[in-house]
View 1 (cartoon, rainbow, N blue to C red):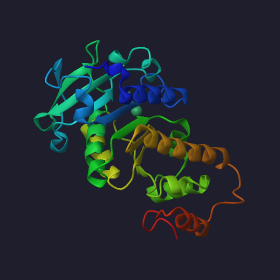
View 2 (cartoon, rainbow, N blue to C red; view 1 turned 90 degrees about the horizontal axis):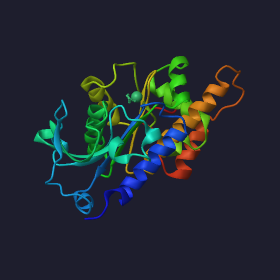
View 3 (cartoon, protein in one colour; view 1 turned 180 degrees about the vertical axis):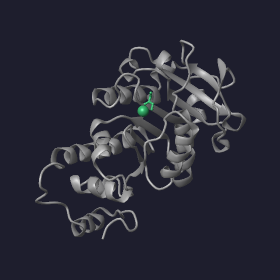
View 4 (cartoon, helix red, strand yellow; view 1 turned 60 degrees about the vertical axis):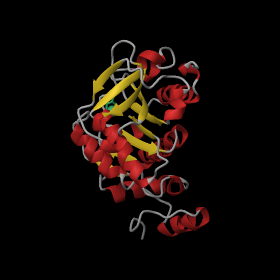
Length: 270
Ligand code: 2HA
Ligand code: ZN
C-alpha cells in the first residue's frame, strides 16, 4: 500500500488549504474543506475495511452512504495543515444512511471532522443532484465578501448583479450568480439544510456576516470561484462610498454571454 501523504488528492488538499490561509480567508480555525474521493483512489493507500473508529454525524444523508471524503478537522488551523496533515485532516466513509462515519485515516489527536460537516455533506448531496461531477465543498471567511454583507442589500439577485458589475469576467465564471443566506447559527443541521437548498441553484452561497461556501468539480475550480467573487467584492468595497460614474451594463453582460457561451441566471439581467 502506498503512503497516503503522497496521494495527489492529499497534496492538492494541503496546497489549497495553505493557499487559502495565505489569502487571509482562514484565520485561526476558520474555514473547512471536504473533497469526495473515489473508492479505487482510496484503496491504493488505505484498507477501507480497517476503520480506526466510528464517528456519529448527527444527521442522515442516504445519498452519500458509502462515499469517501477527505475533510478538515474541527478546531484545526489551515495554517498548520502542511506541517501535521494527519492531525488536521481525516479520511472518512459514510455508512448507516450517513448517520455514522468510519474513520480510515487522520484526526490523529482524537479529533473529528469540521463542525460544519452537516452543511458540507448536505451541500455535496445537493450539488451531486445538479452535477454528478461535483467533488468539493469549501467554506472560508474572505474579508471583502463578508464586509459587503454589512453594507449591501442581501437580495441575492441584487447582490450577484453587483458582483457581476465589478469585474468583466465574473459573469463568465459564475453565470448562475451567488445565493445569499441571512445570518444563521453556524454548525447546525438547520444552516446545513438551508445551504444545501441554496446549492441547488448556484455553486456559491454567501453566509451573511460569516463567509462563503463554494462547490465545484475539483479544488482548483472551487478555489477559483471564491477567488473571483472575493475579487469582485474587494472592488465593490473600494468604490461603494464613491459616486459610480461608469459600470458594466446589462447590454455588455449580454455580449459576454454570447462571446463566452454562458447564460446568466434566468431573469437576473434586464
Ligand atoms: O470554525 O469556519 O463556520 C470553522 C468555521 C465555522
Ligand atoms: Zn466559518
